[in-house]
Image (cartoon, rainbow over all chains, first blue to last red; front, side, top):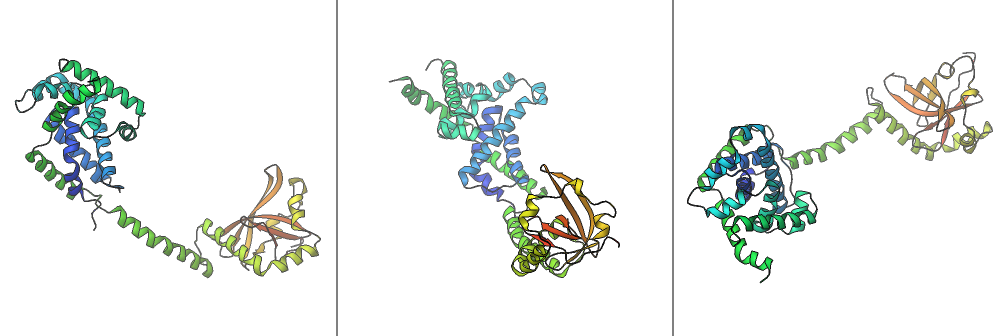
Length: 157
Length: 208
C-alpha cells in the first residue's frame, strides 16, 4: 500500500521549526519534544496534500501553535506545574543566553507566534496574519507590544 | 538611529540567537523521529490521498457506465434518482424522435403546450370517481417504457394547481416522478428536465 505522506521527509524539513515554536510556548525541551511529536502524528493521522513546502510549513506552524495553546490551557498542565517553576527550571541551564530566552519565554502566549514567525522565520506581517487568521493590523500591534515587553525585560538594551 | 533600527541592530540578533538555542539536539531529533516511525507503523491511515483520488477517477466513469448500461437493460433495483435521470435523458432523446407524434396527439385534443402551462389543472377540477391511478394504470413514457401510475398528488404548487405522479415500472421496483395533466381521458406527462408534454400511449376508459 502506498504511503499517505513521506512523513520522514516532512519531519526532516520542519521539525526544528516546529520544535522551536513549541519550546517557546512550553518552556522545556521535553514538552517541546512531546508537542512537536504530536503535531507530526496529527499530520500522519490526517494526511493532506500541500501546494509546496511553504504551505506544508505554514500548516505545521499553525498546528503547533494551536497544540501548545491547548496544552497551556489544559487543566492537567496548570495543576501539575506552575509555569514560573517550569521556566526557571528550563531557563537556568548554562548553554543558553539566559536573559533573552527568559524574556522570550515569559512573553504572553498571544505574542509568541507573531514574534517567532516575524523575527526568526522571517515572515512578513501580512503573511503572519494570513497564517494565523488574524488581521495584519493585529499582528503589527502584537509585534509592537511584544517589542516593548522584550525591551523592558532586557533592561532597556 | 530610530527605534526600529536600534531594535534590529541590538535586540533582533539576541532574539535570533535565543531561538537558535531552542533548536532541538540531534538526540532529540532522532528520538522523536523514532517515535514517529513507530506511530507511522501503528497508524491505520497510511493511504495516499492521491492514490484514492486516482481510484475515484477510475471508478466514477465506471459507475456511470454501469448505471447507463443498467438503465438500457432495464435492470431492477436501481435507485430512484438514476431512473429519473435516465427517464429525463430519454425524454430529451424522444423530443428528437417522437415529438411529431406527441404534438399530433396534442393537436387532436385541441390542446397545446402553452395551454397547459397557462391553465394548470386545479384541485377543484379533479374528476370524482375512480382515481387517476385506477383509470390510467399504465403510462408509456416517450422512450417506450411502460410505467404503472402508483400515486397522483394534487394540490397547490407555487400558487398554482398541479399534479405530480409517481409512476412505477412493471417490475415494481423503479419509479419515476413526473408531472401529469389530464384532458379528454388522456394523461399528458411532463418529465422534470423537459419542458415538453407527452401524451400517454394507452388510455383506460372510466368504466374500467
